[in-house]
Image 1: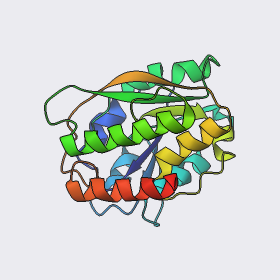
Image 2: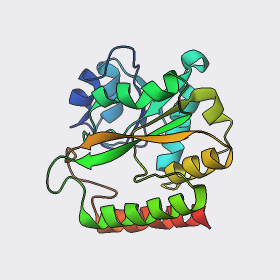
Image 3: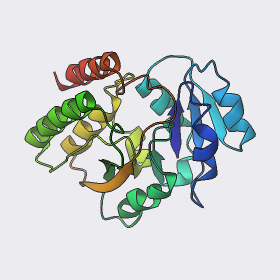
Image 4: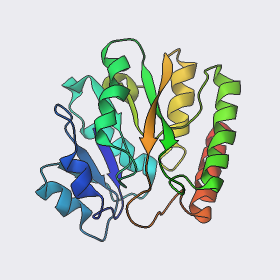
Length: 213
């Protein structure tokens, strides 16, 4: 269970305490200044330090740190917007060999949980994914599950915000079975640094557009 974090000390305690049985958290500290890494270690998580800034860099570091015998690896944001309990439903199709990559399609639980500008950008990217892959995907969900070793071998090169998109594109091109599971999406804990801001959304779209091109 890989959780990339950058200054998420407020959200981590609740997140790690809600981890379902059998899911071992690997928290990748991507340069936090609020003690996120120390806090996660104190709560029993495996902590990996990744000094190279970038969402993809943090995810890749976590993937390399995952035990090769784990079989299935999961990802989720560390900002408190997603419930770790939903990992069980997201991972189940992969564990049952009914799918190779499962995305958690976000379902906002409250007004403001998913800002309009971020939803519009996500909808545009999802439409392009449907056009390119033929899979009926609605969301580039940050909660996802896949076979760990096959994911390592997939050849994902982006180390910024294009990582989630490149994963899906490469998996589809490789003939993986892709599906979605609806998951509740709540307002994040603390100030958003990415899609909760217009600037962060623009940066994310820029990185994903580079992957598409």
